[in-house]
Length: 183
Image (tube, rainbow, N blue to C red; front, side, top):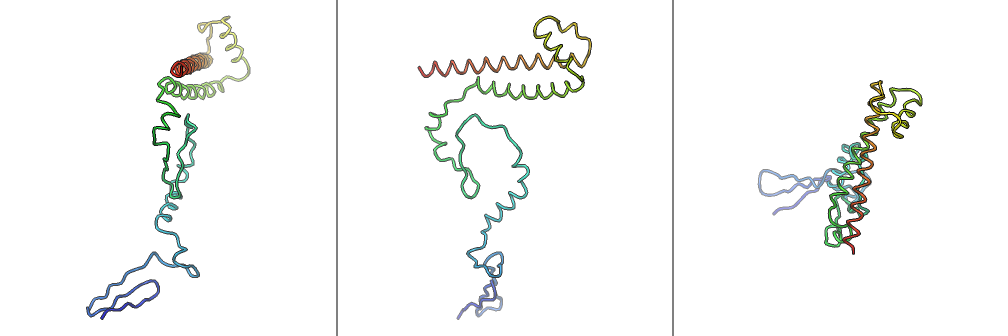
């Protein structure tokens, strides 16, 4: 004859054998709370994950071009829903190489502008803006500039203008191509 004796949260099985098997019925208890109110192991694991990786997950990221973002379920997993279907492809469109290249060039432009602002801090005052204005108007040439810092500013300025034009051309090409596909 076998019967069970309950001691706290442990269940001890008695039997005709000499060794007793003791099983835990959970991770512990909290005084005043029912066992059904305690967090399950997956929730505890999720909380530890968020606590350990929270600062990294809070870092800003570049946004996507799409207005469609898959949701997350209560466990934090991706809930793709309709985004994994043919409807998503129809609504969002196929991969556009021109827009992809424009996005990569926009990242390069952002880095160039950061470098330009850093180099620009080396020269005080408004003289650097006067030189850039004269250069843009075609009154002076790159060879007329003797300061190495000003030459670095001019190089980054010219590179930024070239990248802006290239990005604009790629977006125009992509727009014309999409309009031609729609007709």
